[in-house]
Length: 240
Image (cartoon, rainbow, N blue to C red):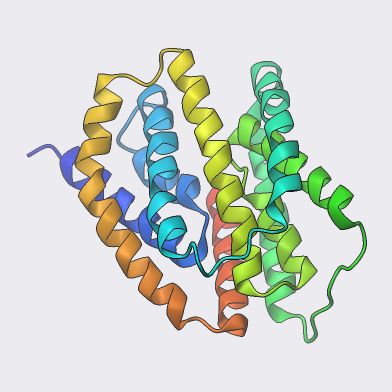
């Protein structure tokens, strides 16, 4: 049996678990595993497609729990940012940029995890939210990191976990949808992508189910610590 038949679903399970428990992180988990076994031209469309599908289960199961009132400015501005990021991708080397984002996430994660007191950002309103959403769209189009800036921002806002997740998870879902459409238009989503996606579906469903169980066990403090730890690990993964 080819090792890919085990590794690809395993990566999907782990990523679905992280997405259901935290609301983001699919591309980082999948990329860290799949790029060792798949060519980038095959891995990227599959990562985006699986990441898009992974959002369905937690968003549906948490639809009556999450708070979506702050979402619109993030999404509307993010849509404008995606083509800007795609343009940068065509004209700029992404690896140094990913390295810089990784270093920033490591420093941010360590500082936020170990600082003695928390403060909340109350300024900027929806204009600042839209700017953060625009940056998320740029990062999504450029490096597949659309969830980074909204996740950081809503954490600094000090919102409860249902309000935080009601912003960044639907935002990532929308950005993945745009990316899938763009890749399909470019002819990069093909029958092989669909075959691998079908193979991953059971692992996605099981991983999502387990992740949602963990999410419900996390109180506000543990949820914040879990998100910061995930951002820290994401930064390390980008650097490595």
